[in-house]
Length: 160
Image (cartoon, rainbow, N blue to C red; front, side, top):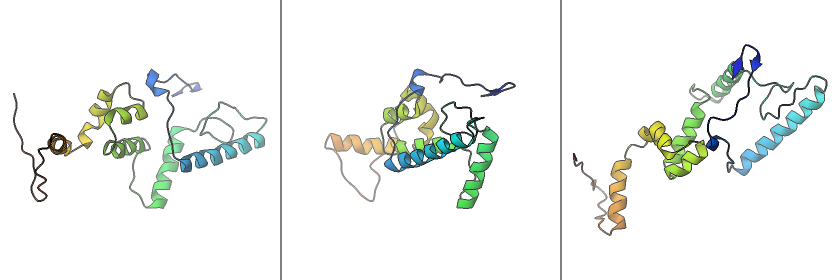
């Protein structure tokens, strides 16, 4: 958070916000290489480096201003020929992709949500067809699947 006095660091919103994440070897390699660049910056700016143990920072160790990060991200998207999105949309994209194949509670923990309910409230609309798929899964589980490939095995029943 930026205040009139500069950056203010706060504790995470919930206990589940502070967590360990499994990441790919590729990402670990990228982070290690980035950390090596940060260490070189520390040496180059030894007299003025403000070490706050940040992963992403300016060459003098101070936090990156959010507007600068946004502008740099826009340039990366443009160079890659990708549509403009907000930086935070990367989180939403990650969540949407995971929700197609992973249980909600697993995705919820990865996102640092306090409960799976929060994940469903925020991302539930991204799961169209889920209601229909659940019918087939249930029928298969109890041995009732007709396995009709050209027709849908689902219908809508209004319940009150």
